[in-house]
Length: 323
Ligand code: 8YV
Image (cartoon, rainbow, N blue to C red; front, side):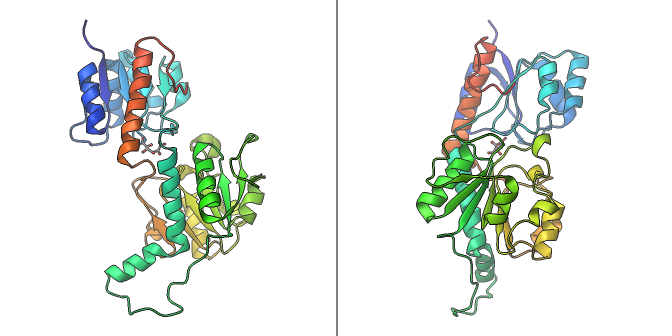
């Protein structure tokens, strides 16, 4: 019996690619270049499964183009938890199961949110740039004074797995208070004293607001000019969720006007481009979407996608079905 045909849209960890090549007739992306809409439609029309990542824009037109040729694929086993790059209703209508990889990237992503929080609170990027540029003139009492995290209030927007992991780190590790917003009631926030509140209240009270809600239409520009205006001028915004959750132009305007103190960003509205004014701001820390970028996490993500893919192709219910 011939092996099922799969298309892996980007390079995956070598350990996982080896398993995929062994078990499937796998087309790997040796050059690791992003696939365009035509290539994605071709993959859906010719393979039994497609394994995309966040950079593959699987919108309705891609499914239409594939349908015109006849869709062969039965599953989109996404490498990652966020699926806002996939038009889920178009995928479902095209007869595809969509799966993701929740759970395995929780700690790695919360760690990057922590990294950004510390970078912006203690002006680490600014200080590092100064040292590297040979501009450091020596210690002085008023040099690069930052903000304390101990005793400060963390505001979590989206108290799912990653939001809770961030809250635990901040509370148990750094002695921070936690207030959070979540669209449904959270029975166990896993942090003593953590209080669920409307978004506006969280924004107004927090010293560090950290975004952990899904991207996509429902949360597009959730953090807009009006909501940024609710934050304290001394408060910082951290985004490790999705770029479209915040209005990047409104964020730039708020930073320029000093309406908030700074921002730590791992995700952007139009990755990999970053609003040019953000690049010039010292009170902003910028990372290239590193949330899940640890070796063990990326392998675990690949193995989870593999388990989902195999389940669908073997006509079992996949562990992480999205639609
Ligand atoms: C991934 C992420 O690296 O899982 C997610 O939603 O944002 C990242 O951790 C990326 O999405 C891979 O597709």
